[in-house]
Length: 181
Image (cartoon, rainbow, N blue to C red; front, side, top):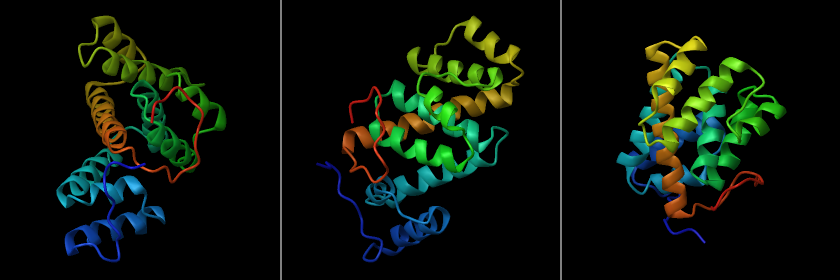
């Protein structure tokens, strides 16, 4: 049972309604996570602004979805694992890479280097080794892209924690995986 309330877009206060309408236009639906975030329009606006900024970066949408899958497993967030499986498919991630992303692997060695680095960032709480950094650089990523990987980890950790605390009701098809919530 959810532990955080959700907002009905039809009866939301004006700022929350405007943000939720933006989500509806972009996704074709309004996921429960965003309805819960709308209890504080500042939280939903921060999430949408951060994810919108990263969407303009160098990392592809597909790679960002693969990062999200790896981080959802690391943080044991079933809601995010389910959501990013659907969103990853929409972004063009193959079924094999959707599955592989859960263990921070990928068919493309360059993408796999990103996933391994993202997983290391979570596991080391940011205190990655020189070898971790050298590996992602050797795969061809520059410092700007490394910054975007770190930002993607931070954004996904936020949503993982938000959904785990809130026990957000699943509104995506459930995915089997090593998760708690």
